[in-house]
Length: 164
Image (cartoon, rainbow, N blue to C red; front, side):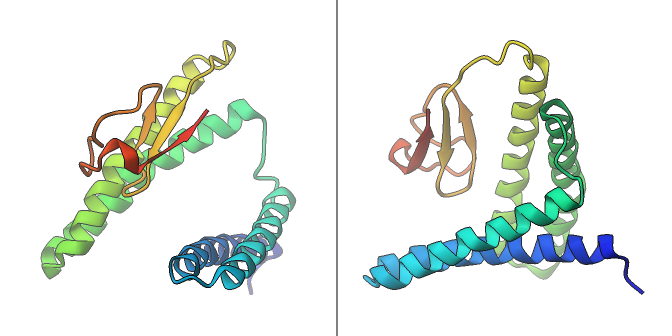
């Protein structure tokens, strides 16, 4: 029999997946000109995020910022080094080129996430201010300088979202 912790974790992961799926649905609805449907998807995605965040708090997964940085660094490192490497091998074995490209680029981006967390941990007390730029194609995060081209997927600089 599953524990209450298992149930809370399932609730968290289910809500997180739903929120992301609904955000992608909202983008598609907006592209197709269904602005009210896009709004509905965004609103429900936000609600699902609230549910997921509540489950995380009940699970006591939200700790101090320093602990959260360390956990995020470890998580990104595990995903890049273990999960994506396995996914890449599977995609290669099946000859699935779109999946192979997705997994390879995602692994590379996860490695940059880990580096960003490590850098933040090294400068935690300084809390230096920086500007981030995220490639809207592959998710690569540039720290400080907006690149002319994404080093992971080659997207041009106009395909980046800036976070100041």
